[in-house]
Length: 403
Image (cartoon, rainbow, N blue to C red; front, side, top):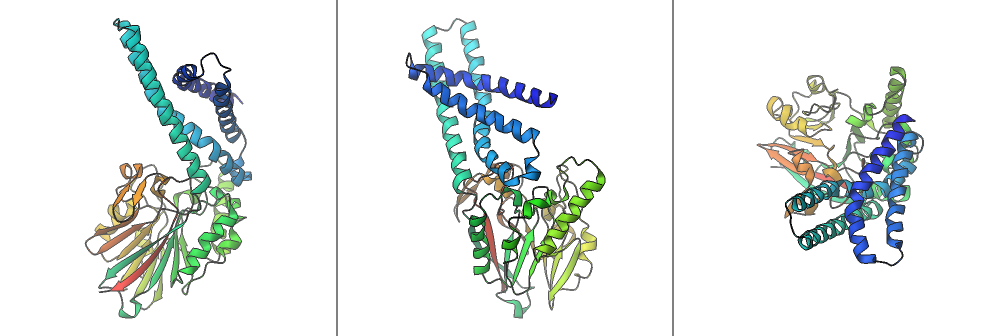
């Protein structure tokens, strides 16, 4: 209870700081007329604050994951926009204080304040609307990316072999099950030889899977569906009452892969055809913020003599940190994890930008080092912010080509 009160207090202080430029502009616009627009502003703000408190107090992420995502879909655009304009708002008041201290004319201060505050409000409101658009319309605007991987190692009989790659489902983030069915239809439309999933089946809990399990059972391919674990599948971001409860939660998540009809690879390899091996490792990351569970040496056992090797590894940082140095005969690595930060600008074949590139060197799409390839899937689901702007949910259709 005390933590909740502190949270509410800090949020209220934050709101007061952000509100200052808003109040200045609204007063100029409204004047002596009834302050209806002020009521609208504070109504939206109070609802966002209550949403934060509800999410903090009640374990909706476990008991009602869909409701949790719906609340976030309203709240996150409001809070993200305000956080982004917080520093400029503070800067504005510091500049005004400096100007007044050194005797700048009042008219000059007023003009500066008016222009700066108006720019902040226009930017913040525009960003909020853009983020709301991203939560309402983009989480289920699935895009199929077609990729060709050429290789001299590929057995001749596998020329044209098709792999459909999906990743980062984050089942608890899916709020519209009927829309999710579109993704399954697009996957099946590719008529894949193999479907692979590269981790983060859930946000944290197996209960997130209850409403979509039947849909996952509909996925079809000639060689089945193979999957690996992602960093969220271990339950590391939840404070469980005991180790036993965390272990049981993890075991239930493992069972969900089997219940979906998927073959989970945990640091192991499987020969799918003569001289074609699929390797699956548990989570390995070059970033210290993520725990490492993968054992690449163990996963590689039995794959040494295969001509063509495909590695499933959730975190793309694993590719440069280990794969291309120690396992030069792995032809193709498939990863996910980044989501492209769910925000950016993409013009296919022309331009690609996202804040994600300041965190990950390989963050979306195809990368190559010598004869080794990495493909980073943009993910099917969402995390934290339950929407997407510019970086849309992805299904990757990969065709292998003999050269």
